[in-house]
Image (cartoon, rainbow, N blue to C red):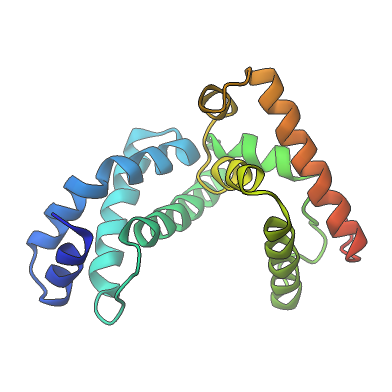
Length: 184
């Protein structure tokens, strides 16, 4: 079923929308959640919560990309679950991503809304300045939590070469943040 037809089912409050969403985007959402959580039980809870959130948000929302809409919900729910697990001392796959980015993203005062907005703007401008391939690599690694090994395989690189490329991108981001006056 096409995404617009699935969205229409949500707007009609037809429960078939959830079954069709599962068929069309369930595997994508599970992979995304699993990369961040590494626990099948947590992943299944996040997926169920994703379907509920989609049900609650449509209507009034009519997403232009159902996959991106569901991906964002899944990612945000996975991050929340990760934080809950971390508070309970249950670590997951996201720990690696956080450790890679901790040298780039400022920690001090990052909870303040203004600093978050400034940081978001700087990162967005930095991403826009990258060539398409580097931008996609960065987003796939740090938004969709794809492994360096998987990225390397798709880019005809070795895992070591890809790791160096990712380090180069993080260094570039760190330099941009310093240039913009963000404390690291």
